[in-house]
Length: 636
Image (cartoon, one colour):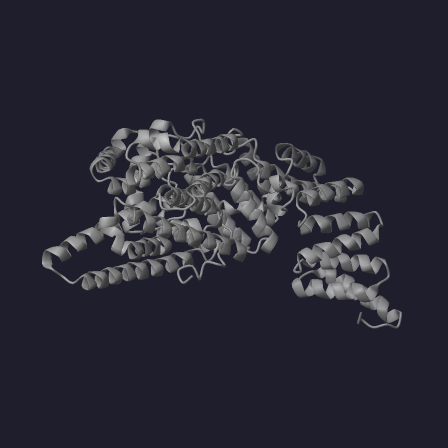
């Protein structure tokens, strides 16, 4: 709690936008299969357990970030407790009992504490959408823990524990694909700490391993839909398997260094691709030596070999030959870090114990020194984690930090521009978008972003040109069509606007904003029935879409259906108490019904929220004038 006390107000950043803010499927918990699914090519696509957790958070706090952060931290704490139990029981297995049993509890506590507060974990905990990693890590550790309980021969009902391991493994497959390595690690755990040979293991526990292997079918079914084909797989087009493997030689060594010296931490590396083996030859030699040492340790020092194999096997799916668009991210070390820490802690204990025996030192002195070292490391890491969480205090802060550490990162400039745009600093945002375009002239996202900033400045022709360039580079860019439609609507080019909204909806039938924006164009063309239909569709997709309620109210008002309009304006205000436009619109509806007291109250509310709303001020004065002529006052 101390390490993460300053993380609960950190905003949605990076992939949080498309996976949470713009994900219509998490807006409701029922039907549950809809809450568990997600549109393609998002972080949560094909990860139903993660999607369902986000839907639960949305029901708790809508888009208020506190519940999302609380959930992430809760998962991390549960994972740490599970790691503690797994390490403690492993150190008390017959093969390790002689060396570790007396210190098993405290060694497990030390491993768990250091892992809990290690600053390398912040990306998996503070960066909300990376709960995919920590959730997977929790179920991965639960799989191993339940397996350890069922395999140790001392449990009264081992069958139930082994069944629990299979269930945990199946659920983990719905969190992230790295879970595919869990059955392999369970088998290796059995061979290193329990079983005498693979033949004996399969003869005695074939049903258990058949169950674990069966969970791969869950993963296969989820991957069959190719949920993130644009960002992972052999057909991404950005990098070949050979280039990816070469790049990972350097990336893996960077991960290992960060385990010991977690500085500098970077949200988005945008790691350069190694196009030739000669670029990473020395890194490849170093990595090969580590792999050979791991295999050798498995043969002669199996427990140490298991800790090393834990790191490489779990990194395998993201750091081998299967290309992933982003070659390096710190959250991928969430679970591998546990193997690193446990191996180092146990080696330090054995070394200190050997030194104590050689010098006839007091065991109590050894324990005191060990406790002091553990507390010192934990304290330092806690301070570094608090400091890192401070970088997440705002979107602008984290992208400033990223640009400082990776000045050539085009995405960092683009995302900093987005945060500046949200703060109303449009000129600075346009500058960052332009820098991103200079760094990568084919980066369609920056053209789109610059178009949005131009549009918000009222420079709609420039905005349309930027959106057109984004669409030229990416013909399936849904948001570019939608926002170009908004720009056309602002210029009164309704035919072009409707064509763009129609294309956006064809590309993404679940994109509620396109329906809402098309409704605005229909309303301005006085096509009120079409506007009402589009707003109703947007509301059906997102029942908490306040703007869609407001715009449907405007369309109802245009048809003279003031009661229906009032109902929608009131719903919009219930969803967003700071929605000045809805107060003003409801004030007009009350005025048209002759309820001037209520109209004035709503205009007052609109002006409190937006003192520069001259139309609301004019309508308020008009309503007050009518009240005075009627001999009333402004009190409702």
